[in-house]
Length: 267
Ligand code: NAI
Image 1 (tube, protein in one colour):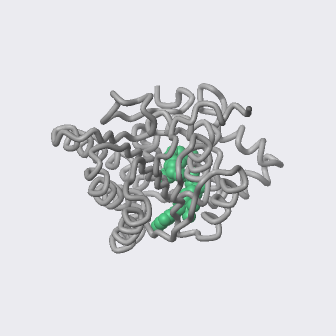
Image 2: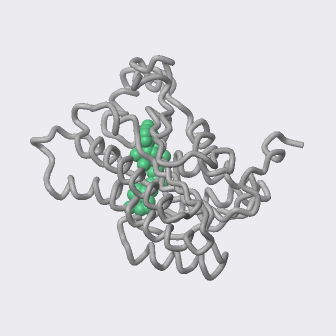
């Protein structure tokens, strides 16, 4: 039997993953499905989310994809209603949808600032709020929010991104303590990866220039990981393993924490 079929740490759990069309969200959806979860893969990128679902179905997992713009409260309400009607509960929510953005403070327009905060922070507030309302019916669940090493260590040129990630970590801790105080077994944690090899980087403007100068993707990843003590970026699958830990009962006493996975970058 393949290794991934042995533990089944999320057997029959219902898990909603945002940003599931790409990168960390996709790797998390695939890993969770291998662990027995029924996946709701949500994203604005419908084709990408459908590809994630096809991958899971090819491995005999359970998944469906749903359009979700994480900045839109009405869409959250509709999706949570759908989950309630079709599955009766929500066990795990992973808020992975996010965007990067780089510009010096004096060049950022207010619209750009609001856009980054909306996709990276409003999304987590909306998902946590509406996810919690459904989880509270069962009295248990796990919410994992994607923060970043950039929420801990300042990156010049990334004020909007860094601010959104620092704020979502604090938001997660407050929400976790509120849940604990209310007596629910609902745990809320954040995860802070350092650099991870995903399309988020490849879609940034500097990537093509970097690739022209280094000659290959592999050399480009190596070049941008120069400041990481372990001398490389993480794979999305490595981050997904940390998210799985927080989603599963293995972490049943872990709440209001921020799990850093950064190869020593923020140490
Ligand atoms: P990615 O770009 O590969 O995937 C992000 C996904 O979010 C995409 O599928 C995109 O369509 C979706 N998305 C964007 N806006 C959306 C919206 N309004 N509604 C619904 N979906 C939307 O990025 P990656 O690397 O997988 O990032 C996932 C999360 O991890 C993000 O929150 C990111 O900030 C965080 N992160 C990533 C790091 C990295 O180095 N890649 C490092 C630290 C944190």
